[in-house]
Length: 254
Image (cartoon, rainbow, N blue to C red; front, top):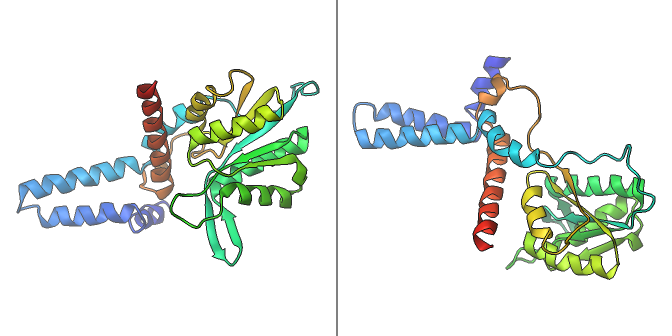
């Protein structure tokens, strides 16, 4: 079974690119030295960034910054709170009038629903559409999904103009302040939360509570599987790199 997994990983993305580079490297083994070095470098880079052991080094510092949210042992009776949920993308126009939340958005919405079910706090969903497209603003799809789960429509407030996290914070803060809520429970992907908190803290000076969800990687011990090139690891690496670049931008901007 292990051998089957290893061989199978080389015929899937990104493993297939590693296999192609290796075949081309063998072809140029006794020919162009410069091409050979280039292919070997590409092969090594693709392999490293698509393995679990490397992805963990990038993802864990972001995802572990804030602990998972737990309801047990906490007092909420005096809270005047609201759940603020960031959009994570949608899949538009699957068929006529049919749209679907991305995996990240669905995880965020589900976490918000669980909190609503227990706390009955209202929910703000924020997310616009990609510029230059005819996509539906994702906040509409998020609201529709929450209603189907059982959230009362009057408990959902939507913000449909935000195109990025900065605008999520700016526009959603206006709604939250108009509702006069003391505590803001910020729900987003764990890997996205450190950057989101830095941005939202500019608009919510205090009482901003991080709620991580949509974890990219498991917390099991390192195993042979983590040394295979897999799309799930490459995706986690890409997500982490995106966040580090965003955090660096914020540092330079400030």
